[in-house]
Length: 106
Image (cartoon, rainbow, N blue to C red; front, top):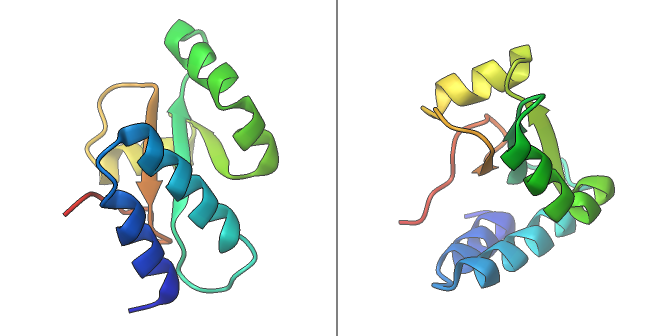
């Protein structure tokens, strides 16, 4: 098991959702420059969506730092991510691996 995989599992084991998210943000930032198949946080949004604007504002700092990637669901990438992971509603913050597969708690 790669170190980032163990770090991700450790974060997902945290029962408090905000604590788990804070841990995941640190893990994503820690491996940002790495060439390994690392986890990434993706915020799926859409133009004209009020809840999306709220989530973008909430995560503004992390988006600017590159810890969270904002992806419009209307783009080719957004459509592919939503379809691959059965996402039907936005906004949606996902933890994905390097193949854009959802990483979930065990």
